[in-house]
Image (cartoon, rainbow, N blue to C red; front, side, top):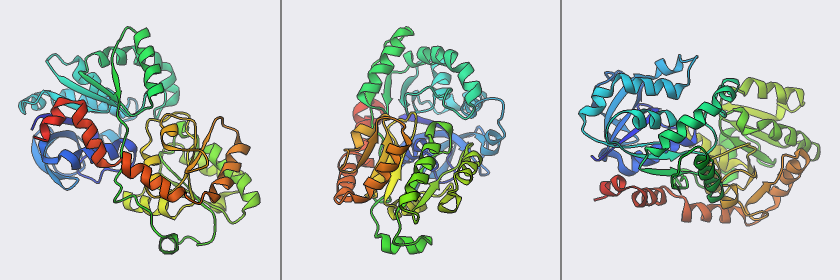
Length: 396
């Protein structure tokens, strides 16, 4: 064992529910029993004691530093910050294993190791370059703390030996300039995310739709993601209302959950489309893959994104996508071939593209080939090994 994987995830349950969890699952499956994993538990594991656990089908050394229910009760402070406090509470156990190489994609974990005295070899992976506080679950508090966060984070990033980012080259350059203005000069290397191309794959709609209770001969759109303000879902709902004027049989599936769910449900009701929008909540990956494969198109309307795992999952299923012009979209979407990128947030333009995307004859093949050739889990593993010596050592 040569590195610690430290994330505020419940490693005793199936890892899903967001791009971050998906990347963690890919890393565990790739390097498995060679990792020492630090995270949360919802089982009976003794908190603060190293043990072995079956994680993503691998037998891994595991240190649970807190129970999942404890972080779910967190209200006044960030959940990730609460996890960092738990790390501090069990810092003696962290030291016991004798590993000084740390990988994480969580800002609070970076802060903890960056400011903990010692010679830590840190690889920090930005899951996206947006301000995590400003775009978090508490937007009002986030706007108040965004400035101080930027300053502290820029200092913490200096302590990382390797910095990676799920972002486009252009966005990385802009972020490096912003860090330079804050007094931090650091090289950030692009590391695209990946998806499981065996799980997320095309499936015949005539087979999969009846299994899901969905009609066969209607336009079906899908949104997959956290229901948060940054995802811009109201634009999708408003565009879908316009689409229904031309295609009254169209359906929209909303897969995911979050703090905006109640507001979005009311938005759909006020728009008069509630009977055609299905809020499905959180679903396991196998079911998500089925919903995507059943759809004619995937929809994105984010204000900011990292290199979206959800986009890769949908393309891997052969599902063309419409997206606002966020990081990663231009690397994945060729206008008129496997989807469309919207240069602005014009609702009429978005609605027109929702109609146009129903007639892209070669989209499924192009979508699938793009992901299999460039964004599989195997490609992620290779890139990680080339980026950081401790990952390379695990392959030996």
